[in-house]
Image 1 (cartoon, rainbow, N blue to C red):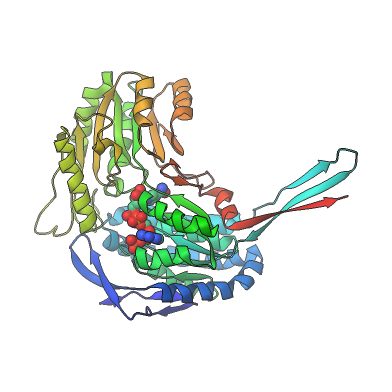
Image 2: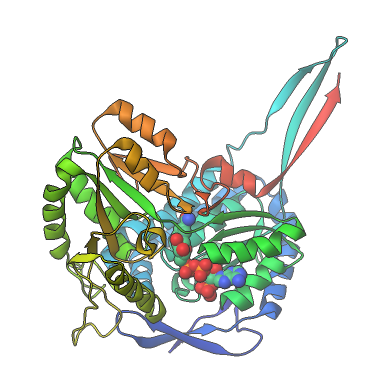
Length: 482
Ligand code: NDP
């Protein structure tokens, strides 16, 4: 059985404890590899390696870092098929999704930031002094040092590289931890880093649990910045440790995103996209729209067509190219989603389609039917708490004001989707929605130059574009009196 290894100081190494734990294929429920049970000793080794590598890496011209990162890009592209297969087996997502979304996005992340680092410019200000005379102020940006990057299981390599790429491109060295639930593609990436000639210690990957490895990264004195994506509760814990140490941190947290559908929308496009925005990746995307509000005149028609399309989705073996909805990532997460379906029923909801675990001889793992629930008020627990699975609610509304109040009633504010052909309304509602991202007549249309992140309990800071590069730098103002 394959043993995953840590990647520290340019080498693949065993954890200090010598202990491993099981990695389970969620489609079969069977153990298929072993994960290092690392602890603070491994994090210390990784931080030391990163600290030693930092001066040379930070001093290297961006063009040379670009060359190394682009070699890595070529290798990920070369191995796209095997990485997609590994992602699908590890996470339960359809291999077709991993092949077209996850792995290509990892490529795009490295390519984007390898290039962006060569274009990062610093400001200068021409300052007029009160009594006459001039000064020039200019900003210097130095890589901040060793950065800690911690990522979740839903888009494993996609989100792992979304953090690592800007950190390394900016001249930082990194100690990173993928989710213990989906460590495989991060391990494969470490092998590709060795092949690409990444200098030892620039990227260090420590596998293991959040409480042992994640918290050791956050609390390490030599790790100056933390970039985290995961649950809101974990984000709170990280902030509690990092804030008194005056670390920089960026938190991409949970969501409970509204999908607002007005009667004047482009119906066919809305319907097809709403099926995707509800159930892509088993609904395990932080940007999925889980609360669907439909203007009353369209409600019955939408309900009928949506339920028909959702019932036709094929739940099945993630490796089957015909599968639309794969396995839920873990037994624990499966139980959580099923408990929310029970809660929805207790709260008076009606299951319009789905609602059950899928069991078949060939599907021994954790599968749940795509589930649509109606008849719930906007402020019940089912509609306020993050479920993060193939479960959506549908609700009618009458006025713009009313739906805005519903949409904004949750503690989260990551993304929102609005369907309308009324241009003025689209702009008006976009400015009033409490969320970091608003998609009008589309969903998950990403441009890596744009600011990405949430408001309220969905997080702090923005990833994407030059902002992510700046996050990994320390700014200094130099004032020269002329
Ligand atoms: P978790 O918060 O449980 O875990 C995220 C990462 O943090 C994992 O690597 C985890 O390790 C680690 N971790 C756990 N505890 C600690 C700790 N005390 N200190 C440091 N690190 C820790 O989230 P999930 O993996 O369950 O991911 C799902 C969540 O992520 C959802 O809430 C989802 O909305 C959110 N998310 C947000 C996105 C955004 O961009 N805003 C994008 C994607 C997901 P381990 O796996 O070993 O427990």
